[in-house]
Amino acid sequence: MKKKRIRWTLFGFALLLLLINWVFPFSPLSLKKSIRYGGDQILVDDYRSELKTFKMEYETRLKQQRKDEFIKDLTTNDVEYLLQMYELPWLVNKDSITITKKTLTDMEFEVKEAKDTLINLAFQEEYSESTKEYLHSLLTQTLSLEKEIDELKHHSSLHPRSMIDLQLRNLHVHFISNFRMLSTFYQEHLRSKKEA
Image (cartoon, rainbow, N blue to C red; front, side):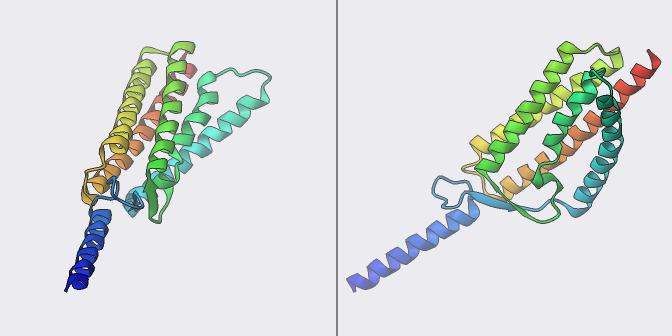
């Protein structure tokens, strides 16, 4: 009788741990601390297409600038480093990918690097008023992204799987929105340079 009770207790405990692992993937009791994330296929396809178009136009301009002996446009040079943030595998992958705390840490690092680059541009480059406004909006959105990742990384241990999935979907959309703001800022920068 005692052995049977111990077996049922162990079975119940194991079942409880499995349930916690499934429902609360980032819980301190979770063994794996990861979640599978697959973005909306239409959203991912559109984003990949926008990113590809932007990069084709941008890389042509960057190659032309590098043929010159010195860098004439710091913004064009630095966009290359900003693009790394938008090419993270979880943003462009059509397949599901595993998100771990390390994935979030890497994401946070890329966003901080982008933020630092934008701050440097704000102080090192001369922009028209409209370009400054777009840069300000881009920097504000980037700070918001950093905060969102930090929230997900540090405060999701008691969030259920459905809430973390929703947070990741929102974060995915915010990254795409941030990329579009970068594109707008850069196009405005080029337009204002031509007019000057």
